[in-house]
Image 1: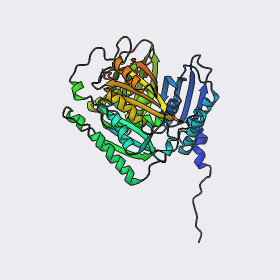
Image 2 (image 1 turned 90 degrees about the vertical axis):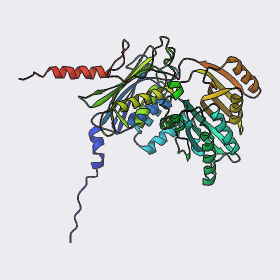
Image 3 (image 1 turned 30 degrees about the vertical axis):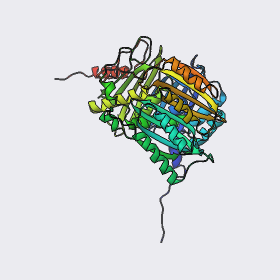
Image 4 (image 1 turned 120 degrees about the vertical axis):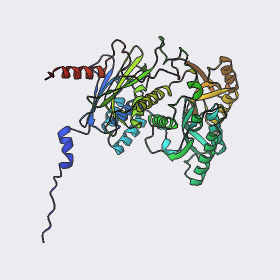
Length: 488
């Protein structure tokens, strides 16, 4: 008896690469533009690849001035105009090599991890977060909550190696990396982890007060522990904070704030008082929903919006991003992962609110405190206790350990959510000045209370000089339709 097997050409697996080229091609051009570097990316398309590429650029603090994205027909093509954190072109060959390696292997998990290890080596960012236990927390915020979380971890004999917390619309999200106080090793005992989760959950649930609305009380309080894998970096943490805030429902404004008419001074921070405007309209001819966002420009803005659309299960097919005179215009042509455009006004309204929240939650105004001291167990708990005892509430925190030194940055407001009095800051400084390097900055450039989200049938008024991909598409459709001659 003869058994026959079908023949498979061993080169068949490489056929897509032979037809289309490598899985990802990256070109870094310093010659075409005088003031910025142009990065071009061509790749086989997949859901979330735009976010992955933007994450790579954001990881090294590049500012995206312009971007054009197209990803129809299974192929992803993107152009970024970028500057480094000093406002210059990318000249450092180490940075260029990292971009080529990280984006060029963004589709391959193993190689992406290697690229992140290379990044840590190049940028001296060898923080070993993978050697510590990660804790994620979300819930309803209240004044002093971050201080209570720090104290609870200290009472549980946990050393806080790094922590990041965002507060927005009466919600809190926090990611902390901890180790055992005595051994400085990850905490992996299931019973101890369960105790930590239970204790922190009790702290979060104590948030509910008689003055809170039903929608606030319904905000899910959740604590989860996990061990992050190798290659964890700050942008991964920020994406997780976005996801936690989204799941906590920070796109809902607190009832007491919704009942108060927003003052005319509430804007997204430019001198002319122009507000953030988000609008959505459907392009029925192409089955797209066009999301238009105009707001004050700032670093990581594109990452924040792309992250939110991706996590809400929307696919970005085309996009145009530009900035001018401190303002940013973003346009995204999207469909849901099921292939359909946004079909209802309620769905549009939710996307608008979520995008507003994504833009707002990173922006903090008021007093920024930068503190550094020799690291010790319980340091963060002691610092936040002093802040709380002086009537200050942490609305955003970035806590890191650099060698033997702890470096902390806090954005502060008083317990009523108002700006901090300078006398209070001086009092805090005197109380800490003997052991801590203390620096105060007034970041009054942006407001965390931007208003003006717009559900409309047309995008916002364009500032002169802004390029609109949506206007181009509609003009092409109109010209195409004019070629038809009506018949009787």
